[in-house]
Length: 156
Image (cartoon, rainbow, N blue to C red; front, side, top):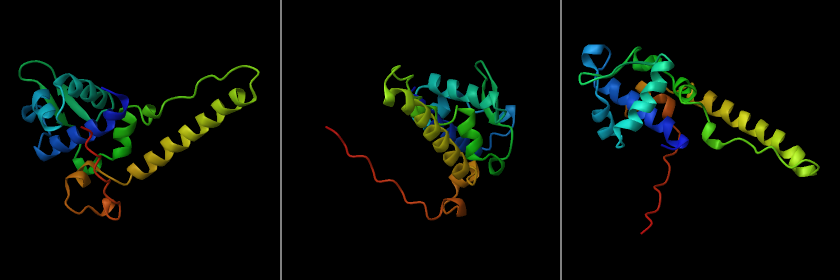
């Protein structure tokens, strides 16, 4: 799974758990069921749920009767927490070291690093206003006014 897919998969999985009322081990949702909803491979789901579990957002249990469940109410899980759980805006990359003696190569990595920190902070600030419960709402106040993205063109 690419780094750029971790956050959308994590947000989707959390919203699905909330939708299914998975708030206790007895209501755990198996990774195959989560994977079918995303849709992706159950291995991808297990990697993401492991990150969410380490962040304390969900509980997980391995095995035939295993699965994942929310540890908090969906309204209390903010998307900035989810972003941090899956390593922030790491998918934007990190600047290369730059060539010694090159005026651009010596300067740009520091400036690009600052830009990446600013992007991560801006994303976290915007996402801090949106909860997992908001993702399930038809007209969540936190999402009002945000334009829908245009569909991606189909490449044949």
